Length: 100
Image 1 (cartoon, rainbow, N blue to C red):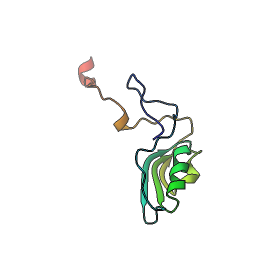
Image 2: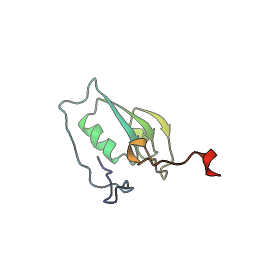
Image 3: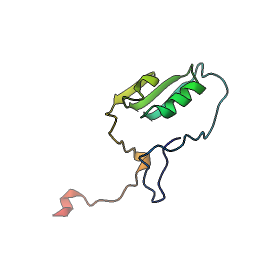
Image 4: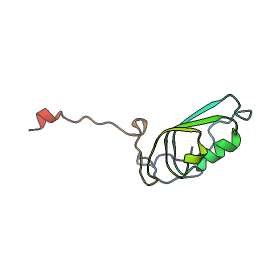
């Protein structure tokens, strides 16, 4: 984990120190590793060193980290910030029809 949240509850848009929440044994042989995003590649490089034989797949890849993963679904520009549903707070908005 290298991105967290600010005290206000908003997401941090600067990478902090890399912090391992859990480690595993082995070299990743036979493993499928899935992440939501490879951004700068800093975290992905550390994971790749830990599990060099795992197949590393991400939903989204940015240019700096793209070469580290084996599979990705969509590429974004490096400067694009991506908001994931699990990172945002939903608020009720009146239907457009009722806003007249």
